[in-house]
Length: 181
Image 1 (tube, rainbow, N blue to C red):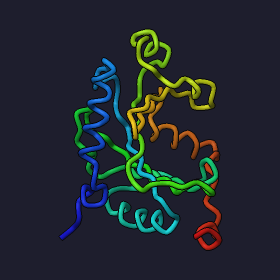
Image 2: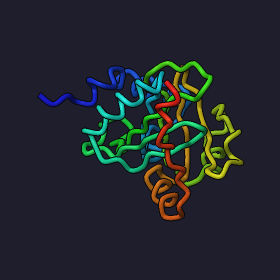
Image 3: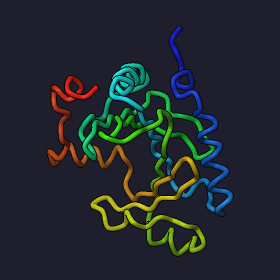
Image 4: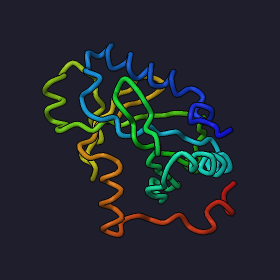
C-alpha cells in the first residue's frame, strides 16, 4: 500500500489548523491569495536525505539547490494538499543550516498576494515582520508560534522557473552530504 503524505508529515492537519487560527486571530482573510507551499525542515542531513527520498513519490522535483548555505528541494505535488486556504501545490524540504539546532517538522507556509504594500495598508494592525521587504525577493512574515506565514508577490514555482531560466540555481555540491553528517 502506498503511503500518503499525512504519514510523512504527521502534524500537517495541526500545522494548517494553527495557521488558520492564527490568521483569523489577526483578522486576516484566509483567502488573501494562494498558499503556494508549505516547508518542512529536516533536523539532520541524514533525515533530509531520507525525507527527500520519501517525498519524491508524491510529486515532481522542481529544483534542488543551495539556499542560505544548505540544500533545499521543492516538489510540485501530484495531488495538492487540501486546506482552508485552498489547494497547496508545492512542498519545500530544507536541510538544516550548519551549526544550528533544528527540530524536524513543518516550519512555514507562503501565500502569494498581489501587493505587499496593499497588504500593509489593508491590515495595519497586524504585526508583520517587515525585515524581508528589502530582499531580492521581498516578503512580509507573520509569526504564529512556533510557525510562520510568509507573504510574497510571486509563487515559489514561478520564482524557481525564473531562477532556472537565468541560471541562478546554485547546485548542491556532489560531496555535500559526504562531508556533513
